[in-house]
Length: 153
Image (cartoon, rainbow, N blue to C red):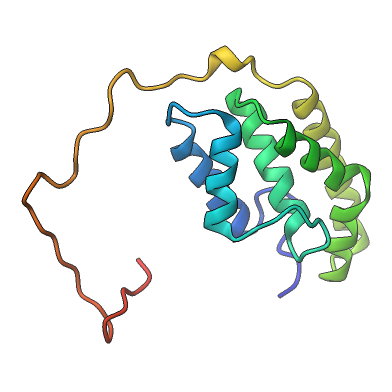
């Protein structure tokens, strides 16, 4: 599909990962559990050679650092995506121009700083009570489908 832009959040998956982490960060679980949910939802693994994987891991590391979520695996793979050159190789394979590659290296510098100096783990605010139920016991909601399959909201 090609490279969208040099910014960390210049592609759809990066924005989706950011939004998912925003929701999951409110759960009273550790970073490793949040990471497992993200990996399952986005069908990702730890192979930095997969298309888009370096950006995925850099976004996860960035969001965890910004939110004070501790997870060595996420931070390690985010740094490895930069240090190993996997991110630049991935963007090069998507035909990013040289100007964009130089701009991405500036993004790397900022991200390295953030990963090395994350928010303190205690700064993560968790709700004091669980969210209200959207559906009460005994209620049923239905939604239109297309031949039995839900369409993209």
